[in-house]
Image 1 (tube, rainbow, N blue to C red):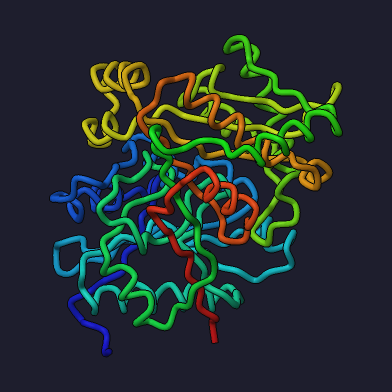
Image 2 (cartoon, helix red, strand yellow):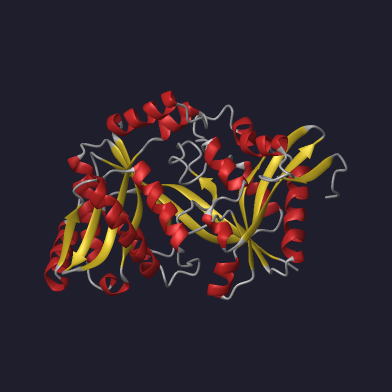
Length: 384
């Protein structure tokens, strides 16, 4: 399709003398225009997005990226972040370009212009593959929603998209790279099968695995670093893995302290060695929707109250060191999920960001009577 002369791709300069406040505002506010009539979209905080546009995220300590908007005349109709993950490419011996925050109206010529520009951006840098949506680390939600359009987004962990997004990616020749599942667990149906309970007991005996609950926020902060160190070991065999840097570790710890509480973090240890972790979060989706990207004192109070009153929880953070994965340690993880949720008297829970390659995890969810309700797909395209 010929590119429309009425369409322009403009950079978003987030700081310094070149800062373009209108472009930045367009980039930040575009999704709320696109999803204005959707009850399922959850906006990012404007303050947090502004920090990203100013490249104050630790990803930019070691890698590069730029942000762009698409304007048709005076109206912003699309946006994208284009990233060169230099540290990841060196670690995995890849030549990848990533795209993130791809948001656009159902406008074929604007989408064509946007991704033609993205391919040329990657080509100029000598990169061979354009992949996304994929963000700054493995903890950043990835993929375009391809199933679950009647479900709320899970806070900002896994973004919401309209069905037409998938159509445009596939029309442009992008192919599936990896799917991530989200599973619903309903309180009246999920339970731990006897076989899994026996496997959990075996794990405790053979490997001397024990579950430790955190006492307070000081204990939580001290243990958070160990959790991130386990992440750097537990995901080492994944093809989209790159170890977190010190600054990335600090940022992850800060985020963890904001959204959860000590009693919802479970640590697995064998003797003095930490072996794994389980992270559960109160679902703050409704409060984030009410905030509409703002973080005033009243919205902050509403979020804090939502943490107390919600009857729904999210499980997004599971890791076991490789040497314990060979034992029935996964059964022990699922046993703790059931215990945690039942102790809270929850109505439902959602396990998010489950990679399609984690067969044991998916089988475990099925045994818990979990329902795969959402699928997010990461797409890729070779640069020629």
